[in-house]
Picture 1 (tube, rainbow, N blue to C red):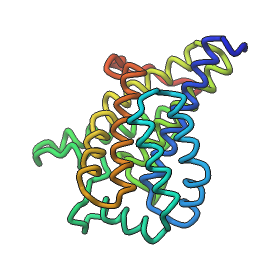
Picture 2: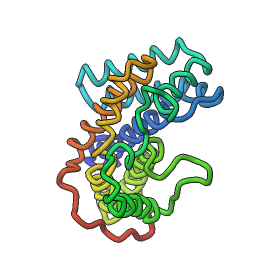
Picture 3: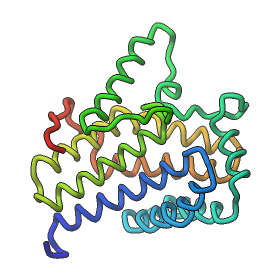
Picture 4: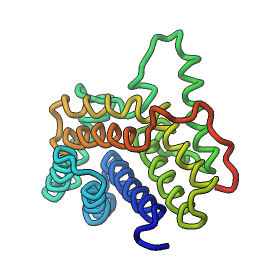
Length: 236
């Protein structure tokens, strides 16, 4: 595959999308010492580099650099306090980190919420994954970001193995549909909540980065034009 092959460009594009989604997922995970080392030394630098390749948007790239700089100067206890203020139910400035809680709705819409959760689980099942026992809920921001990372990696692998074909199209359609139906509906709202909460600067900046990148990615992959019905998944 030559460097000028359109598939080579698409592979690089999807690998960079995957790096950004992985870095964002790490940012919102509950902090511990090992998490800090991995996020600081690998995930955030790769997020910044990938975003610089993906876009010339100075505001978005600048926000990523701000998060990296803030992360360099913090420790695990400070991050734990910031995470608790941002997401813990006992916090007066809490921003709900789950899709169903962000979207809200009257009690009579519980059936709709059940359907939405089943739809999220259906995406995961189609690709052979599920939320880990004792881990975040399926509609948690970390889980949904990790799933977008997985789809981007799978699309890059499919393009590498077979070029533009059924498998890459399935991954592309799933990314677009999941952004349209789930992550893209509420991640910008969560980002706005974090930015306005006046909590830890890392989480305020991470919120702006989250909302900005999800909106950017939805436009780049045409999430608004996603298929109304997902293609059956085979051998992905």
